[in-house]
Image (cartoon, rainbow, N blue to C red; front, side, top):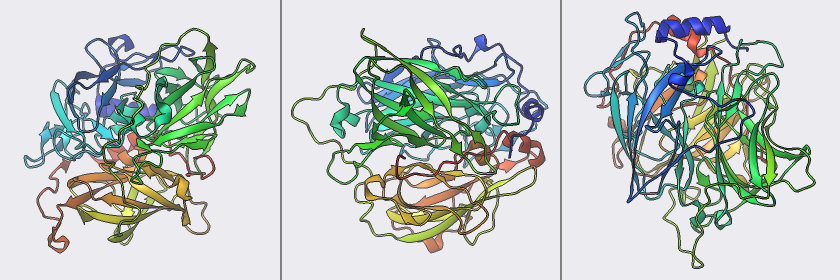
Amino acid sequence: MRPFPRALLLAANAILFSLPALNASAGCFRYAPGSPVIEPEDLYSKNGVLTVSMSYQTSTDSNGNRLFCYVLPDGNQSPTLHIKPGDSLVLTITNDTPVPAQSDAMQMQVSPPDQCGAATMNGSSTNVHFHGTNTAPVCHQDEVIHTLINSGESFTYNVQFPTDEPPGEYWYHPHVHGLSEMAVLGGATGALIVDGIENLQHAVTGLPQRVLVVRDNVVPGDPDTPPAPAKDVSLNFVPIPYPSYPPAVITMNAGASEFWRVANTSADTVIDVQLQYDRKPQLVQIVALDGVPVGSQDGSGRGQLLPATHVLIPPAGRGEFIVQSPGPKVKVAQFVTRNVDTGPGGDLDPARPLANIQTTKSIVSAQAIPKMPIQWGLPNPQRFVGLLEARVTNKRKLYFSETETEPQTFFITVDGQTPVAFNPDLPPAITTTQGSVEQWTIENRTSEVHAFHIHQIHYLLEAVNGIPVPPGQRQFFDTVDVPYWTGKGPYPSITVRMDFRGPVVGDFVYHCHILEHEDGGMMAIIRVLPQGSNLNAATPASPGVSKIKQVLAPTTRAPLCRSGKLVKAAYTSGGL
C-alpha cells in the first residue's frame, strides 16, 4: 500500500505540531547530494564517564520537509558517543524546538507515580532511547513509556552500562509514542559505540573504522507510482535523492582494509547493503550484528568472522564488517543497497547506490581501532553466555496484524489475547520474572514485513518459518524482520530465545521497528518482576501501571501513521 498523500501528511503535521517553519540554517543542516562522506564527531568517555550536552532542534528544508537533529555546542550534529562496558553516559538534552500553538490537540497527562520529566505531552515532546543497550528501564536511564521533555525544558540522563555489555554499535533516537516516526524521518539519530570490540575480534585491530549512518526521509513531492521509492535515503547526512540517486563519495587508501560500522537508523526503510566492484559483489567479513560480535557468546571470549556478499539490515539494525578497498583495475566501485521485497502491502525499497568509492595513495584520515599488545587478555564477561544451553522456562506465541481500512491500526498481540493498539494505560501484555529464559514465536499475519524489536535485552534467533537457523549464523539480535504472508499456507514466523537472566527488571516495550507501525499501535509492554516474585500474585493493578491519559482523538492522529507502508526483509542464511 502506498503512503498517504503528502498534502494530508503536511496537514497532520500542521494540526499536531503547529510549529513555525524555520530555515535549515537555523538548526539542522544537510550536505549537498554527491558530497564526500564525513564522519560524525567522536566523543569518548574519560575515567568511566562520558558527559555530553546536546540541543534538540528542528527546521524545515527547501522541500518543505521538517528536519530534526541533535546539536552540540560547537554546532556539530549527531555525534558518535563512545563508552566502555561499565561506564556511565551523562547526557543532557535541551529541547529547543518551538513551543506548540495552543490549538495543539495532542495532550497526555502523566500521573505523579509515573512522571519522568514533563507531566503533559504535546507536539514538541521528545525523549531519548538508547537502542540495543542492556540498560535499566527506569527514569533518567533508558525509559521511554513515561519520559517527556517538552519545548524549553532540559533533562539529564545518567545511563549506567553493565560491565558485560557486548562491544559494538548501538544508536540513539527519540521514542515518544505517536511522534517517533516523524522525528526519526527528520534525522534525529546518532551512533553509540561500546568500545573494546578488538578484545573479542582481533582481526579489526589497527584498522581504520568508519561509522556510516543511513537515514530515510520523505521523497519531495511524494510520488506514489513506481519506480519512486517509499522513502529517500541519506548516508551521514549526504542525501541520495530520487530519481537520479547521486551517490555520496567514500575515499579509501588503495590496497587497504577498513572496518565499517553501518547503522540503519531509518524510520521505515530496510536496506540490503553490498560492495560492488565493476558490478561484481564483493565478500565482506561480518564482525558484529546489532552490537554483538559474531560467535562471541559461547564462553570462549573470542569472536568469529562471518563471510557474506551482502548484509540485510532492517530499520534499527546494525552490521559491522571488514571491507577491502578496490584494486587498481576496478573502474566503478560502489557501496549500494539492493532491492528489498517488502510484500504486496509494503513499501518500495529499490536498489540504489549509497556511495561511490574512490582510492588514493595518500593517507586518508580515519579513526583506527586501537592496536593491542602481543599478550592478549580476556575481555569482560559477555552478557549472553550460556543462553543456548539454558532451560526454557516458558514458550509464547505472538503475532503481527493490522486493519485493512484507513485510518489503519497496527497490532502486536500475544496469541489468545484480543488485538489492541498500544496504550500506556493498559496493563503489561506479558509478565515474567528475572532469571527466566523464554522461547517466543512471532508470526506475521499481514502482507508486509514487520521488524520485531524488544528494548533492554537481545534475543537469540533460532528459526525462521520453523526452519532452524544454521549454527554458524545463530546470532544475537535486538531487531529482526519477520517475512510477509502471501495469503496462503502457514504464517511466516521467527522463533527466538529471550534472555531475562540479566539485572533488568521493570516495565519496557516490544514493537515493530517500522516506526509508522509503532506509532500506529504495534507496541506492547512487558513487565519483568524481580527474581523470586510470585507471578500469580501479579495483577494489572500492581504498582507501576501507567496512569497516562490519552486525550488525542485517534482519528486526529492517524494520518501521521500513514507515511508509508512497511518494509520487508527476511533473514537469509546465505548472506544475511
